[in-house]
View (cartoon, rainbow, N blue to C red):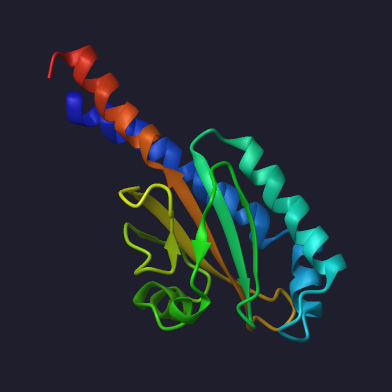
Length: 169
């Protein structure tokens, strides 16, 4: 019973995170902005469009800690509830998670280690789970970006604590 309660809570949270990733993936404005990206220089209009969608996602759920979109040039667009967060662009494309998500062709994967691509300088022991997903163009299905959603570790811990308290474990 304890395990079932925990499984149910976590399942709901992960399903919600998947739905939030769909909102970014299929957002017409985000699709148009990412398709319009033509260089390593970030266009302010594109940045503003993507940023607006990311902020809306971040505000929609307490357990989403940060959201990143890496375009085809590895420009990153992000919104986060905690700071500072450091991004090492040189690690992103060579990471196993990036390669695996690229091969998954839009399907989601979850990881617990960003392999140094994302770090928290003021909280080096920070742990959590991240959803990773390639974003493909709706017109030609080519990859136009990579989405990374970080789930707050305290929410996961809270689920374990609540179940433990409720069932005396």
